[in-house]
Image 1 (cartoon, helix red, strand yellow):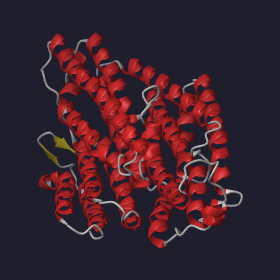
Image 2 (cartoon, one colour; image 1 turned 45 degrees about the vertical axis):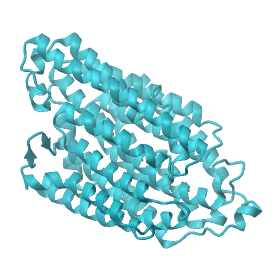
Image 3 (cartoon, rainbow, N blue to C red; image 1 turned 135 degrees about the horizontal axis):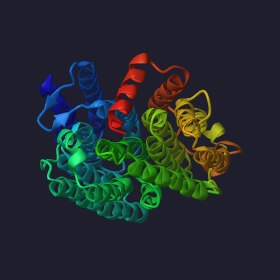
Length: 479
């Protein structure tokens, strides 16, 4: 079973080589769902294995068991959507696009199982290089600017994360502990590490990987990148890549907890979480670009993830559950918004209205996705956000809980105004005359994601609940 562990990144890497070798533009996209299904099968085998397989620096730990299947399910549903989307975009070659999607899956999978801080950093950096071509797919000045902004800002963030990794190693040296960047060794010897250097390492790593997550004020690449990238790319960035960056932060949080510095890291996470939600709420009010609106929604939910972990206890459980809910719901929103953009040729609500008339299925899914992502029952995000809110009140942090509720309400109102402007009314004449229509290939993958989000709001399966409890307990050891 240890050899199977390597397949989670070898399978998509081999699929990427196959995509490069296929000469036909029309056939190449079908590599994506085949690779996605194979990846899902490997992930299922790893989750079923007991004990968790390990190989050198690779181990599927409890945190990875939350992130890896989330990424795999999101990629598979996006891959089902991809052939129909790329068939509509047959005006441009898709070799680089399909290959980059598969390499992105390979590197995100490697992050999920990396137990060496240096290897994890390499994998995070590889995602930056691999996703740049995806943002530039439309090949216009706006997408070129977005791709360069993404590469430059995230590269600076990842460089800071490298500096934080050095600080982490130096903390062990200064404390006289064994010098190692393996997470198990760092946790085991954390009590011996230099506390000032550990604090410096955490701050630097939070800034570095927080840039990749899109936590405010490190989020400036998101509105351009998400606004210009195809919907399938936005879904994988907002639901997959940001989750992997958050996983990198969680692993450092575990070291801080083991060192007895959990209060320091928790306070930083709570602060940056509320600040991210505030920034998102400010920019979401009166937002006229519905794809940029989704970028600010991502900033908000990265803040919610950080806030939950900072609160600890039930908040950590709620944050890990919210990671899953957010990823799947972002898939619904980005893919359905991609259909709307395809039909109208515009991202502005000045030119987009009456989507329920023009694209009934896609618009209904977009509206349902908005209801879900804003924490409304009976969808999954309601359960995870309520769990985080309960954690705030149970620990008597009433000001934080009140601010959380107020920001959620502000986002609901601001986001709702944009979404309703898109779906209600009558479509413009030029949009009504367009040829793009809903089809099974462009709607069913989105509906599958929405059913999963609805299912998590109605019923949390005991195996998933146990997995989340194990991950939360694993994270908070020593806190």
